[in-house]
Structure formats: structure tokens, C-alpha cells
Amino acid sequence: MADVNRVNFLIGGPAGTGVATVGMLFAKCLQRSGLEVFGTNDYPSLIKGGHNTYAVSASPKPILSLLGKPDILIALDKKTVEVRSPELSAGGALIYDSNKVGDAREIAKRQDITYIGAPLTQMAAAAGGEIMFNTVALGASMGILGLDFAIIENMMAKMWARKGQAVADSNIAAARAGYDFSKSIVNGSFKAKIEFIKREKTLFINGNEASVAGALAAGCKFVAEYPMSPSSSILHLMAGHEIDYDVIVKQTEDEISAANMIAGAGFAGVRAMTATSGGGFSLMAEALGMMGMMEVPAVIFESQRAGPSTGLPTYTEQADLLFAIHASQGEFPRVVVAPGDATECYVEAFNAFNIAELLQVPVIVLLDKYLSESSQTVEDFRKLQLKVERGKLMSDSQMESASSFKRYEYSANGISSRCLPGQKNGMHVCSSYEHDETGFTSEEGDTRVKMIDKRARKLSTIPEVFIAPSFHGASESLADILLVCWGSTKGPALEALKLLEQKGVAARLMHIRYASPFPASTVLRALKNAKNTLIIEGNSGAQMRSLIFQKTGYYIDKTYLRYDARPFTPEEIAAHVAGLAGRK
Image (cartoon, rainbow, N blue to C red; front, side):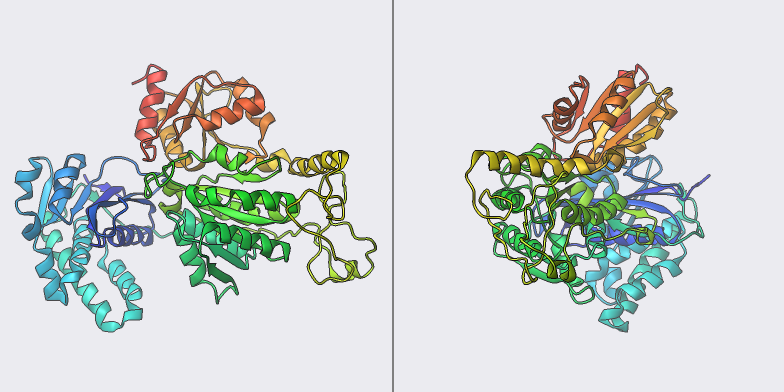
């Protein structure tokens, strides 16, 4: 009996052959069929060649990570058959170009899968052009699943409409050729089947796209960025929305310029941001300190990749946490938040602009390659009722009656009123030097102490309920173990909870978003009440464990660390935890 509406998909081939495009189209077809979908890519830092993949998991229920072995493998070259065919689930299907690959049976040497060898390039040429051979492969994957072809046709029509009807018709014909070919081979006997589910429309979106949506909703009006993967798509997306949202987007000569530009924009009262990865953020460290001294709001998206230095440019890691918290010399408050999924990317991006202005501090949003470039179905978060808050920003009428304006006036919570350049009675000094309440440079010891203390008080204005971690899974009293994670590890860890439940292990998950300010009391309470604790991190030094120990005095002795520049999988987490619990 076919498994309805549950399928795992993988396409592989060299860069430049449309691997990611086909993977995304497959995912969107299933999304439009009413399924929950998760998709992610894997690729080396090559423009052409290498081995690239795009993987998709789909389910009628929410899915937060890839889960299980692929049921369908599209091999656009021989190497994909060699490397990936062992991963196929029993009863799965291998779709390949019979001319390019040759005899896949001889290469894979598996008797428990279906081989669908088709002359993809020739079929594409007959439909209008050899370049569409990957579109033929996409159609073939849909044919064995029995997906309504109208869904593919509608998507192709919209996707290629801007290039004219002839291009759209050719792609539809190519997809139809592959669809009919594979459907005739399996004849409804394949292990998985897709049936349409009527449901509310969802978004299929990755972390970078959701972050851009959140920034635009928050009223960001200036973007200065030097492209650095995996953050580069933020620059491209912002540039694409420049006119519609009245945003100025500047590709700067380097990251130093980008950071200084958003500092200037923040001083001028404009909501501004940049995006980079660890190497670019390193160059921003001096400007970050200047923002702290000047008390100007700014937002920095830092999408982590494997370092140090150039490292592995297209692979993921969670190793910039402590760097983000301590970057630049001296002491000054900054907010560091690490969202765990696309919805949190949207919400925390929006919050970042509010916090930056409410506290007059730089806010760092920590993403990573896995979160930035993995797409998932989510409810339309644009329906959320989020409110723009600009803090102590003086209006023109307030400044009209201002007397002896002190930009850095001492206050109980450390936050002073600020005005915009050109407002009446608002002239003041704003520089990188330590200063008194007016902004004039001061090297007096008592002034220095007062200003350090004033700035430090800002973070205490954020209530712990706002920055508190989220909890999932078993209740505190029933949980056998508390899993602790942060950032993008949330998705695989949540899926691992389901697998652990099947193994008879009651696990609870604490996902930490805010690293600065840190929700110490909530975290400590959860740790003390847990029977057993395990922290899961994508770095070799257990950086979040170090931060927890620093802030709470509680040391988590069990760790599960991954630092091969690949994301965690639910199966690995579940197996490790089950092993600890003696339930393999």
C-alpha cells in the first residue's frame, strides 16, 4: 500500500545544471498540493562542477527538518549515482539520464529500487531545447508520485511568464514528457503517492528571505552590504524590493564601509542594516564599538559559515556566538539573537529594529548557512500584529521647547532622548570618544564610570519574558532528559523529539534565542529541575555551554557537538540521546 503524502526527494549533479532550481520546484509543487515541506541544498564553493544536491522532505503534518532516506533520487550525472544511490530507501526510484549515466543498474548494484532511465536530453530537445533536461527529470519525479499535472503546468506557466509564452510552453512540454515516461513505468505501483489536500495557503521560505521580510515590515530604509555567502541573497532580495518599499540599497566596497554607513544612517534617524558572514563581521568590529560609544541604533545580520578565515565558504557552523557577544574592544551593550526557524527569522528581524532604537544599541541577528538557505512551509507570518516602536526619538515639537539638550543624559534605565540632525535646539557632539552628557569628549574618571554604568543599564530594560527560551516536548516533570540548543539546531532537535517518543524516551527541548541579554533565571531554573541534561551545538567548543556557565554558574557536562560543517539530523540526535538513555 502506497505511503500517501509522505516522500523524501534528492537531486544531485554538478553546479550549473539546475540542481537547486529543480529541487525548489519539486518542493513548491508539493507545497501547492497542500503538504508541509522542508528543503535544503548542499554545494561546494564552485561556480561549475563539483557535486551539488537539493533535498526535500514532505509530510501532511508540520516538518521542521529533513527526515529519513530519499525515496526518489534524480541523478543528473554518473557521480550522483555512484555517491547517492546507496542512500535510497528500499523500494525507492532512481531517475537518471540513460545517455549520460549509462547502465545505472551496474553502478548502483541494487535490486530493491526502481530504475527509470530516460534520454532526458533528447526528450528536452524534442520539447524545445536540451537545456530543459532537468525539467524533464522534474516531470519524471512527479509522474511516479501521481501528482496532478495541472499543478506543475500552472507553476511552470507562472514561473516562465516573464520570458514569454513560447518558453513557458516548452518547459511545460518538457515536464509532460518526463511525467508520462515515468508514470508509464511505475503504473501507480510506487511506494509513495501524492493526493491534494485543501488547506490555507502557506509560505515556502528560507531564513534569509524571512529576515528580509521582517526588516521591510519593520521599516528598514537603508541597506549597506558587501556580498559574502551565505548572506548575499539578503542584499539581492533587498535590491529587488528597493522601489516597492522605498529602500536605498548600497553595495559597498567592503564590510568596513557597510558598517560605517549604517552607523551614519542610524545617527540620522534611518532604520538601517547590513548583512555578512563571520569574515565580514570581523572587519566590522571597530565600527561596532563606535556604534556602542555613539549609542546609535543599527542591525547586523551575521550568517555563520565554517571558519576561521575563508574556511568552508558554503557550509554551516555555529561558531560565532561568543565572537558576536564580545566583538570590538572595551565594554558596551549589544543585543545578540539567534532565531531557530523561518518564522522566528521574520519576528526577530522585526524585533531587532525596534530593540535597536528602543535601547540605542547595535543588534546582531545570528543566522547560519543552514538556516539562511533552507526553506520550509510556514503559516503566513505577515498576518502577525507587530508594532513599530522608535523609543526616545524626539519630535520636532518636543525639540522646539528643548533647553540645554543633553544627548547622553544620565537616566535610571540608561536610555537618553535622541534627536535627528537639523532639529531645533538639538545640536550635540556624536563621536567615537568617551564623553559627558552633552557628547563633548571627557577623560575624567568619574564621568567614564558613570557612562559605562549608564550604557550597561540598557539591557536590563528588556523583560526576561521577552527573551526567555522556548520549551517543547515532554513536560518538565515527566521528561527523562532536557535537550538544550540554540539557533538553527531547533528544527532537527524538534524532529528528534518525535523519534525519541517512539523509542520510549520522554525528552524536553529548551531552545535559547537570546544570548545577550541572557535569560539567566529561566535557563537556570530549567537546568536545575531537569533529571539529565544534554547540550547540542554546531561547534567544537560548546560555546553556548560556556555562556550558560558564565551567566548561571551551571555546568552542563554532557555535550553532543558537530563541527564537520554539516547540520545535525534528527536521526543522529535521537540515536545519541537514546544511547544515553539505554534505549537504542
